[in-house]
Amino acid sequence: MAGFFKKLFGGKKQSSDIENLVEETLTGVIEKAGFDLTFDVNFEKTEDESVLAIEFSGPDVELMKDKKGQLLDAFQLIAKRVIQHNFPEDKTNVLVDAGGYREETEQALIDKAENLKQMALEQGRSVYYRALPPKERKVVHQYLAQDPRIKSRSLGDGLYKKIKIYPVKSPDAKAGEAAHD
Image (cartoon, rainbow, N blue to C red; front, side):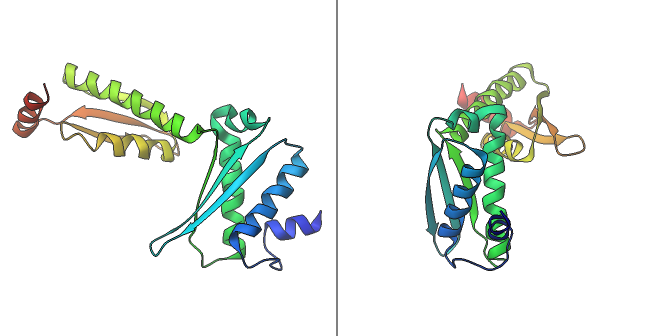
């Protein structure tokens, strides 16, 4: 067991290869937890960035999606920490998914944002999106930023914040609105 944690959080490097290290670590976590899962690791390195994509599959894949993907987030955090501890200078982005869960949740956020955007435009007043974690707020803000007729901003304290969505009050926005109708 001590060897497992040494591999997980540093100590001597068994391998200089990030992909192999993450595969070994995830295999150990899956075995210790008793999950019936398999995974594919895809490591892509370009001049600008490195991305390590991990896709889970198997009979227990629904557990990974349960409770808003908290287990996916946990595996993503473990993989990121293993890389940080063993390769401190490396800036690899880690993306963990199971059965297209990330894409489904992102699309649901965008659909809700679209509905709220339409309400704000039709009513000419602010509407609010429920409190969201930073990663989900970023998706919503980026989507809404594509429409010049609308603005958004986060409100609140702490990790979870609401999003205020409101129409832009300017002559350009009215001209743009007439063009979209």
